[in-house]
Length: 133
Length: 134
Image 1 (cartoon, rainbow over the protein chains, first blue to last red):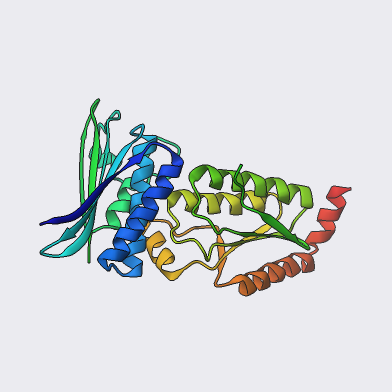
Image 2 (cartoon, each protein chain N blue to C red):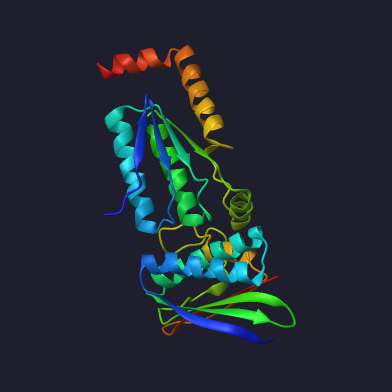
């Protein structure tokens, strides 16, 4: 799998989330994803960026355009927050430790083709998602 | 501070969301709308989201909250103009917006509001509302 283009965006404030959504939309459109797939990826990015900001205390999103064997977009969200003690529980619909609906992780997993999550308590969380053309 | 304008048209309030909202702006809209419903004794709220390119769980929750709060204040809410890609994504995300009435466009949404208002009046709802306000 080769990465054609990569950039890292900060997620430190709510306006950053707006920028993240816009950049993901542009990358998805340039990769040639259908409108529905673009919308799914941008929505997943919005959920994951919010998690990074609220639960991770801020972090970054790395945006990668993939080329070969297939075209796609990969997003990697990284924070140095408190981490997730029980990932299985966190991936369940409706589970939340905050004030939200508990759809952020579980919902965004349904909106992408590949979903990976690594988290260490006290060290942080990394979520990587890919949507293929 | 950045705000989303709320227009009054007779007994209804109209909101057209034309910007990519960050979360605080969505919260502000929710508070502004409830205040305006109460100030103007509006009977209906129409929210046009045709310009929105995504509705994530936060915006979805805000729409549900507005519908619930307006119901408590004796007003109906209709959300109109959702793009098909947004609808597909929202349902896959796990939100089907329970309790939120929707219509395809502004015209259909206004019809729905007028119909439900007339229905209320036919049931003597307005009379009881009048008495309680005196």
